[in-house]
Image (tube, rainbow, N blue to C red):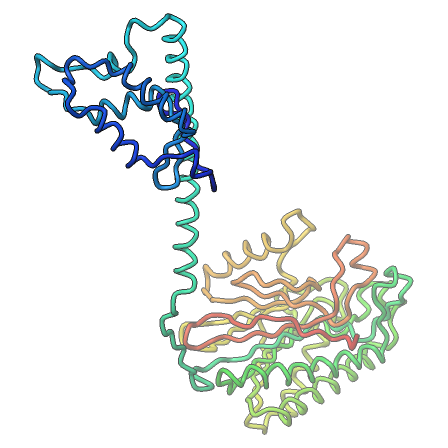
Length: 442
């Protein structure tokens, strides 16, 4: 930093022999000015005289509060002017520029003074920029510190009350379909993505009912569940409607029907024994379990072999107050699980899907829109497509048989064998806890 060509420096130490305090320097100037007519004095000569005396005595710097100022003519002129008793009246006013930089100086001296003043302004501009940058950085750090203070501020109390268990009611819904019990799938036919034999089918059926009971028990910890809807949605057997089905069948149609009936009956017994819920069992025929080449529309039940299973099971359980079978004659069946919430059940084969880019969602929603014109429901449940899908207003069940050569032929996506489980909450009238029931041990 410079003041009128005089550099001001701050050092840690300087010899006392070479310095004079600003107070002592002011005393020397006051003594020189005493008894002298300030209107006639030559300030420049006085400054040079004092400077020569100081230099002879070995003084080179004036010191004030740790700041060392070189003793120069300009600095002494400034001090003398300040210490003088020059009148400030209009007729005796002396301009500081004229005293400090008299016009009789040589041109080179004036140029050097201008250069010093320009450098002083330049230094100030650099300092101002640096100071401005420091202020900006300080502002950023201050904001960070304020955020830190907010983060570490003592937290306000926010209590979360523990609600009592089973605060509301729900109905559990389980979808069972597309077992294709007697059909065989070899690993080689599906690139080793699946295998299906009678023993594998039995293991998956056991796992299905066992995992259903586990999921029901888990959900009953948080909501009261008195009823489970066990929807039997068809295609439990493959049948012989196609020639290749006959070739891949491990049992005759009658044997397959008897085996499926036995296993569904055992599953119902297991659920009653391992839970406290009542069972409502809507039953629907699939498109495979029939004895006609083509699907019947008006007389589907009389051509469905699965319908016979359902009727037989309903008679077996007719005296049990915890079991209610619903074996209907129409393609649809309806259950009002709560006032204001109705579920429509069907196998799904009346939804026409030809493998479009949008998947099954588009044709299902189109079909639902048409069916709702006759009777509006909140949810549709179906199987048939061998793939799990929860579309909000519908749930499509997957399959117990899993990935098959037919799925490969229609370019279907691989999906692990599973069935479906979800709840309908009575308080909110919404579907909750929608999940797959996986059937494989590994």
